[in-house]
Length: 366
Image (cartoon, rainbow, N blue to C red; front, side, top):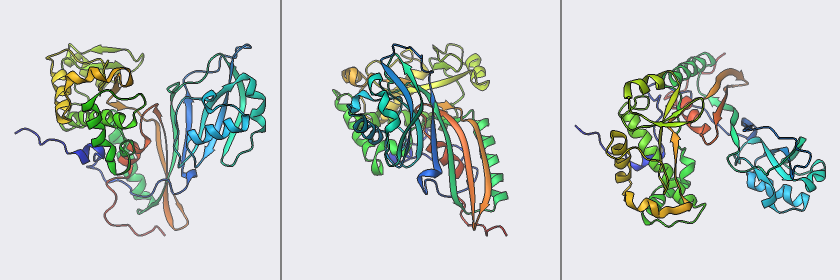
């Protein structure tokens, strides 16, 4: 019997991959300090004495990266467009990321005195402005408050979840519900935008449609037990170099997936996305995802430069994943630490650890 089609709501907000194990519940983001993010740079400043820009570190609390950039630009009397960043960080968090400013504005960095925004050294010269995507990843320290379990039970559950995630080969690199706007409304709108084609560059609604289709593809493979099982035609990424190749020997590639030497990729559909060989099992799975979204594959070329598309790994590893649990006053509190590659969602990992939440609250430890 064929599997039932995936529903829109479960593609927007899927159940955890480890849903067979109980989570710890609790609350995240009770205050900005409970969600700390530090950017991992893709490369060091080159130190060029004639560099046209300088790098420094931007620390912010409770505001978006765009808000912080505008505040810094006002303080330096430069255009916000002159300030470079590698990524956009969470609003409801305390974050630290690199920025670049023109060399002639560097002298003013030390005098910046703004609420909830600070620019700190070292100030390092570099030939080029920072651009979006020029980062390796992010480190997270997340406090989970109000865990309705004794510390010992919370530790046991977290250990079981972390072991299961390792056994699965990492966390699913799917998009979190926040990608789809309030109440997921941008999901359906994004599919409609893809159907019509001819978007404008930076169209976040269309991007939501691309993300929804990626989630569908990933979840269909999860349902069929194929997240670490290769099919003929799969586009596979090497974990050491990032190079991509087409699978023509599923058994050999599956062994590499199991050893962590490679990872399967899924489609971020667009006008120039590299697709599996036509007629292959991998091609047919991607065609099925397009059919689920009501997308005519022939219209994808009309997306043009505004949505060229790309490939995205289906699984990513949470480096240094660890958790500690303590009793603070009258509540159990967990602190989770990990690092993720750029573009991956910390909330997906936290969902794995926290849900399904305990049905019955345990009495507090004495």
